[in-house]
Image 1 (cartoon, rainbow, N blue to C red):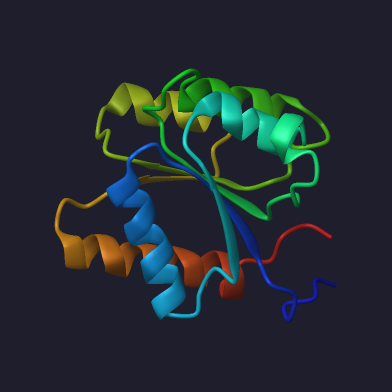
Image 2: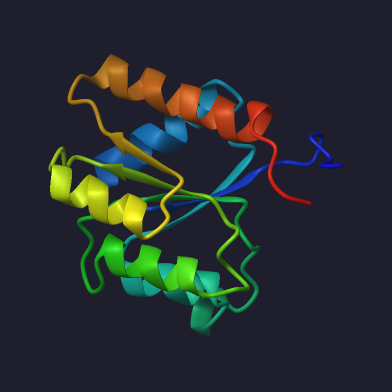
Length: 145
């Protein structure tokens, strides 16, 4: 049985400062997300997940919010690496992207993304979407033990 009183730790992998700020603000304002760490590129995401370098003491995230269009290493590569590793593959990954391309969505799900969400352009819709995402993953979802 999962302890739902335990804070959910999100890893936000997002290179756009404005989008990262919106995600953090929406989760804080609605007391959703509990804790969140952020990295700004794909290489840093893998360093965080594998606890390498400056992330040696990083907490294993409960959920990864992953942008696709990242510098250094793209989100699809991060997703494929994470989901192919038996130690990390159970971590849910929500692709959070501006890409509405069918090819990107199909490839993300083929790489075992748990969800694919297109970022709304409207500020209020973006804010509401993040709040709902955070509530789903921290309140309603039941991860494996």
